[in-house]
Image (cartoon, rainbow, N blue to C red; front, side, top):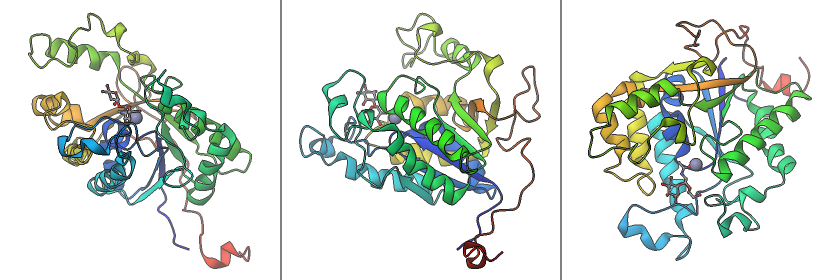
Amino acid sequence: MTMLPDRRLLLVHAHPDDESIGTGSTMAHYAANGAHVTLVTCTLGEEGEIHVPALAQLAAAEADQLGGYRIAELAAACAALGVSDHRFLGGAGRYRDSGMMGLATNEHPRAFWQADLDEAAGHLVEIMREVRPQVLITYDPNGFYGHPDHIQAHRVAMRAVDLAAAEGCAPLKVYWTAMPLSVLEAGMAHFAESADNPFGGIEDIADLPFGTPDAQIAARIDGTDQHLAKETAMRAHATQIPANSWLYSIAGNFGGEFMGVEFFTLAVGEKGPGTGPYGWEDDLFAGLPEETAPDRSPVAAAGLR
Ligand SMILES: CC(=O)N[C@H]1[C@@H](O[C@@H]2[C@H](O)[C@H](O)[C@@H](O)[C@H](O)[C@H]2O)O[C@H](CO)[C@@H](O)[C@@H]1O
Ligand SMILES: [Zn+2]
């Protein structure tokens, strides 16, 4: 049995690419600073678009091989982030990408959107029992932007937290990914005159399917030193993120500030000490009791200690 580091972070994401887009800098930051980072991805992303023309025939409606291909993209992204502990919920291929809300693919018998909540949560409890993470990151009840697999990932993760609490192996803090309204407002203003405006057609940030009042944000994690790792990880997901994506042009404009800083609300647990007008934490483990990593020696495992 190997001893795990004192700090253990678990992330639950819906598709291969979400981990890099939404939490890449945070993952790289903690991995680089000695924490054990465990990523759980709930589907293989079988229903995704394909932005690499040479791979177009892997699509679900053609050879239906995109899921397998995205396993390799995800492995490359995790390597770029310095994350070695990656699992697929229930094993690779157990739950299928449900496609966008309202599509017929939502009804596929293995669609994650159709998953039995307690069965899916049970797979996550097994990981919590093994790793005993102090901190969990997932999405808010809307799945950040309303994708059915994101909403289901939220539901499964939060159900697993409840089930794990009964066994004493639940995370002490649960965060949901978030984007402060002030950041969205700054982005909209910056790109107002740009030809490559990601906010094109949006009159008001209230029309976006995401955005959180700054006062409701609990943590601002500055992974600026890891923004190139995040960009490399995103580029590993080439089928999903076009090489000429506005995400990279913003990175070119803002650099580390855009790519390297990620925000979270706190859904479970006590917020630790913070700074600024809203007391934002700069460490997800802030306020947690010091602890030694659980004893995973064979002696302890045999109940002899
Ligand atoms: C970031 C994320 O969750 N990506 C999902 C999402 O992808 C969207 C989908 O392909 C849609 O058709 C596009 O218009 C949109 O731009 C994409 O973000 O949904 C896919 C299908 O469920 C999923 O595979 C992908 O990982
Ligand atoms: Zn996703």
